[in-house]
Figure 1: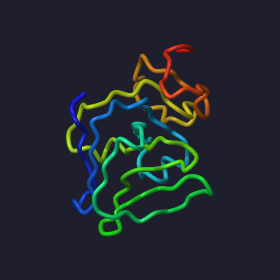
Figure 2: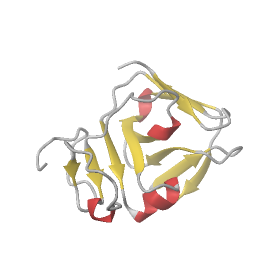
Figure 3: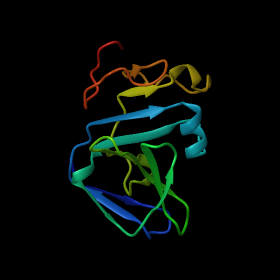
Figure 4: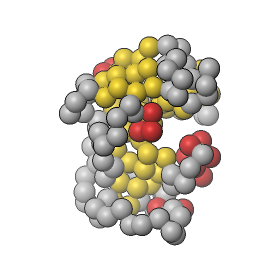
Length: 141
């Protein structure tokens, strides 16, 4: 995979990684919908120690263990971090180039908008992800 570059809308926060994502998914839960301002959130999970971030981010602690990082200048959401893991969730919309990742699973499938087409070939979870490993299997599709 080529190196992934991205950041906020104004350029004050930048990130890059040469790592392969562990998994890529999209979520239709109410929290992701509200946070992204869209009908779903598309994200890629990367190893946190393989991500370089420049600029400083503001942090919203949405729970005791999950922190959402956004640009303090323009307000763009950039990434999320569960402090109990060594993974980081990058918002695919913050990537500089399109078509660098492809989702393999959907979370909270029952909350998805009925007018969305079936994306096909993805594991569909009724709520949170049931897999416990880093990678997403294609079982249960």
